[in-house]
Length: 199
Image (tube, rainbow, N blue to C red; front, side, top):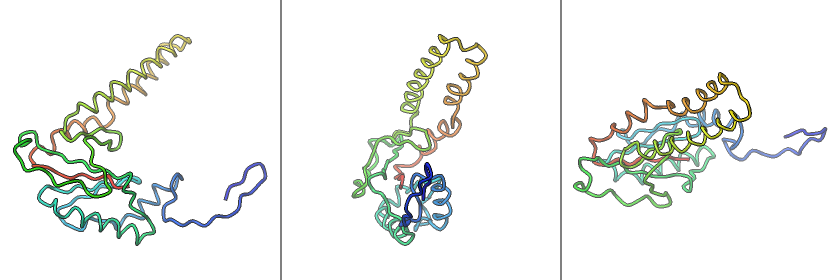
């Protein structure tokens, strides 16, 4: 129900467990997905706000469909729906074994397989290199520097320019740096690993 200029909107029933686009949505999802766990012990599930990430090792690739059916069943039981259109799959392959190891299983039905994925603002590619993330950072920082030049031409004082630079450019450069730098080498010992972002 909304009120604007003295007018009150009609009541509308809530038909889903998590209201999309609301400030309560992420918190509601965190409470709601507390009992969502992988069906298989070797799989890992990470949750942040309204994002859920499922990691399946290569040895368990035959259980992918079963795990996704489990997630769909959990969602249905909690008045939610697994959005396969927004869900993505990425397969990580070791640099040492690339070209020698067996090929990963075909993509899951209805879920797109991608070569790169953005996880909490960090671009991760299937080769586990930082190239895509660094390229994205450079393009973004270049735009920010242009904005700083505009501010400078409009007379923003030097100290204020430094403050804006630290808050924007430096902040963007160091955001999650220890995590993505380490993650580039984290899975190099495995043959391939399935990583899902489930929405």
